[in-house]
Image (cartoon, rainbow over all chains, first blue to last red; front, side, top):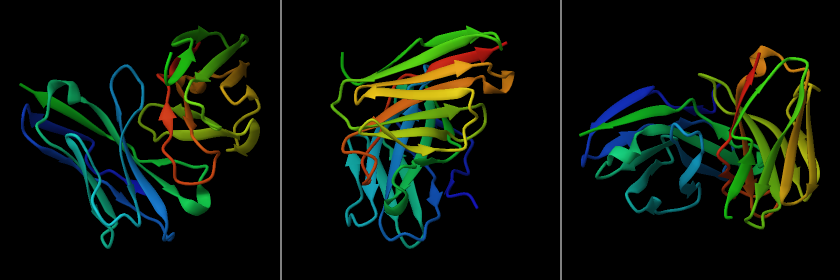
Length: 115
Length: 115
């Protein structure tokens, strides 16, 4: 079974609008970490935001926030005030405390921001 | 230089060639990773080194040979590759060894084309 599921292969959003990228995960561990990365066409995987399974508050980093719903096993990324430079692939990933060598990635969502 | 660097950024090689990919991290991290990113597939973890010792080898064919001479450098030696090995090869590092839920920071990748 897939550990990380990103059901949106592509998303469009208008500049200055907010957009939510979906991510659901599957784990039996109580302790795990969830990550979002951005990959522009240049190829580099850029770390955006991290949420620990025991963190009570949703993580925020500038225009990025993570909508963490533990019971639903979802960790959606919210980008506020989208910019043209946000156009990229976005990957959700998980690291389990008992499997800490592995960062398990989803298949990604391609976000296109239009003027 | 800061962060994680990779050279070369692009590589074209024949199936009989031998080449090496280089990764260097300037973050003082203790763990380094090689990932393969093929089209329309999630990132695949290939190798993990923690404190210069290999701790993970994800059933990678022997035509890929990693080397970690010190905690700042990681190589991937390539020989007699196949066309299906064409992909983006990403290097990453994380701070305190392979344990824990720390963030992995990625380099820009090497785009490899095997003819």
